[in-house]
Length: 285
Length: 285
Image (cartoon, rainbow over all chains, first blue to last red; front, side):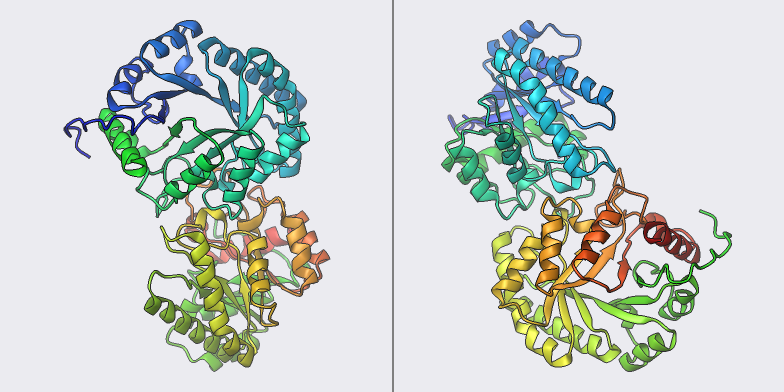
């Protein structure tokens, strides 16, 4: 992966919905992201909370807008389940803080990685997730920030999320009375295997819950459960088909590139950014 | 993990349904398995096909019985999908061979890891799986060998199985007309996360399809997608609850210990066998 590739000429409009997560190019500072993303046609930015550390929230939001980028969402809230009530309250408090942060930078959405506790029943964790979301929803509504439940791949059911299918995300939205401030994030990596995928995406559209769409690819073989995601086109996910389902469901927001990859993180980050833009164009042009 | 632990005294009957797969103790030859398993109270044996290489089938079956072990199943058939018809026919031929082998050694069951092709749609792979099973079912029926569809964890949907839930396994059984020779293998590792698990196990009982139950554990963290399974009790799977569901569904067969683990494979195999028997007793006594 050479770092000396020429800058790929932009095809105007092809990247109109291209958003990149700060974690994807985590070697770049927020300032570098703001400088580099627009050069490659990236028009949206999703900020991970660690990128906010030590910064003034309003200033971050202003600089993102001045760079010509749309602030798509803040990653991430959630992790509600815990084995004791005090820890669950700390999780609620941290989610309230994330809502303040999203409001402060002007992000309209927080993605929720819901959480799980190894050895605690998944049913109990799901109940705690619903309770935790219910506890923070009023603050989200007041702040004008929406929350998106992101079902995580079942390989993360032990300690990251007891919500592993879009059906389960819908069930939580239903159980909480389908509040306006609550919706669903569809991440291709987590849900591509689901036999109900097309129907559940359509349902998310019909119910007004389809709030975010994350893309990357599934590699064969996958060598690490966390940090071996592929660039779009490197793997086996039916991204073109899935994107058509998302579009058909009425979603017109950004397609967010969220890639955790030890391999790509070892590459020169500006080169990686070129490759992201190029693979995005191949997929959607 | 010392190899010098004393042999744990047997509690008569506690291991009555304990079966171990030859792959679990793959450092042991088949002869060593036949000598060592009964000493630890193991009463069932599932043979992986590689253990049959270069052996006379009838003699293998006779020696297993002479060792006092019940031959529970042969692992594994399947891998039906392929991108061209010739490769799919080779898969059918190999499954016909596995039926001959099971018949030859006197195993009543073959477990099917159904297969998948990276980049081929999962729907197409599922169709090819159903077609492949249909092509070999008559030979299975004639040989008195049953076939068990084993849904694999969704993290194997790329290249190992497009059948990732018990619901999907039921759908294939339904589509093929619920033949007597076809059923389902429930492997705790693959299905523990499934929100429909209890109901789908019950359905497998009601339909006479519950043919096998595999156990091990899910580790946190899991460091390898293939070979980092835990011994029962090392991880987070609700094995006691799941076993109760399996029993309630009317399944009275062996509980088969199938553990792929680079960590345990590095231990002295007789010690590992002691640990398997001890963890089994802790779970079921």
